[in-house]
Image 1 (cartoon, helix red, strand yellow):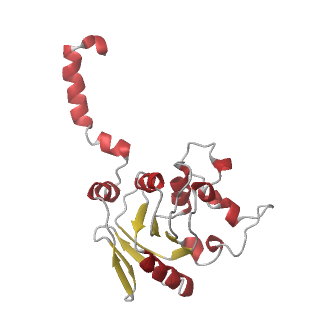
Image 2 (cartoon, rainbow, N blue to C red):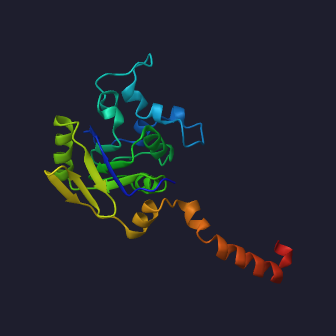
Image 3 (tube, one colour):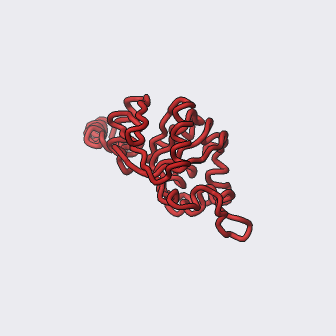
Length: 202
């Protein structure tokens, strides 16, 4: 998993509440178990018309937001089903950070397991960043995980809270498998000793 430490990027404003995982990646695209290739179908029903053509008004179909690595969203982002394909699609598109006032719990935890930082900020701070992203799209937002800050030039500087263990995992690129592999030597030593005691299990 790619570590997350600090990014500076254009932020795409998505002023919608209750964006569920079926809106993020419709069920039609859940047949794959690969983590790549889903970016083109991120927000598929909002990005494309029935003929597969881009809808010009949708934020990620417009410059400069096509290159955004940060998404600013409304409350209860990622609600609905628990599909891990939702963070896969965001990451494959290039989104490394979502800023919102609240998230669905399962989506929130899935983000950390896939290299995406979901930032909680109060509604008024999200509103301020959203307005800036709409009015001055070329100005980047800086998200610093080590310092736990979100900055927009000299105008805004906000601090966010995060669980220390989740922060450690994200900064070091550790998903569940990575965490297990950190203990590989201990696991091998146990299996060797245990195999001598209970060879019938091995």
